[in-house]
Image (cartoon, rainbow, N blue to C red):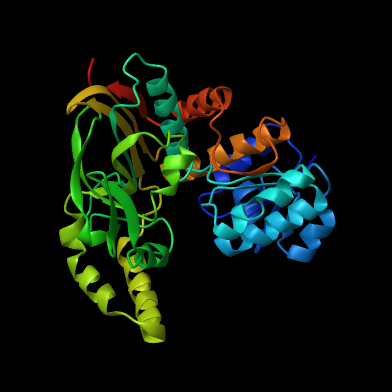
Length: 380
């Protein structure tokens, strides 16, 4: 069985190298073969220019296709896998078009795993761990009020005046600032048109506690079911969001004001112009360490008093292994590929696994990737 790894961008390399070094049969596909050769040419010469039809002719039943390409490739590749009886893995969010393939995948005996990178990915694993731990505790009761938060951010290890640095084109970050979000606050649905309308402060329980600016992103609500909350639970708060350095909102205030005014083709052109400028001024320098902080917390209260409260906290930064972002995105992807090859994940379209055995294995590997990983019990 062959692993067809498509895409050798900055966030793909550690996981790809791990699979090759482990002795798997890996074929590397990238739009430019020179970049792929720079990334893994010391390990393999099985490198090809990415072309959909050529790839399709090579994919066989039981193979795994990994897409680390832009998101619009995921669904066509997954459809191709289902047709060929091959499996599919990506780190990206499950789009509605991907979710719609679930029945076809199950009927074909094909596994399509998504959301197995950093965020989404490691955050899901932490959430599944905390929910299972809470359910098994003496404090568990359907009468409790539940608060859940999940905040993740890639931030510079050495803060700069802009309070942020870019590993790749800033355009995606700028476009995300135009997106609405949906979460739960004070038992009610909270809809926010722009992230800067809902920035708050969060104290992360790191070895030295540190305060960050946070805001909700995307649509948090579907993850209530994904994380296996019972429909009867009283949910006081549920938010998945982004974490930024203190001072970020002030440093970006002019950007927020301008983005609010951008519309149509002219607006898109201006976003591209801004992206180019920010890339010139605030890209990571060669060898400069990045940092990733991830905090996932679950709290249960009874009559207003906490009866169970734990936070899974991770702090990682770039070192001699490369950037924290790259290893935290791509190595979980490689773990999912191996789990698929071992038939440990059933057919169908799935996010990051919740199986206890896989949780233990995946989070054990994350412990090696991060400089700090800990479950903090706030009531002990």
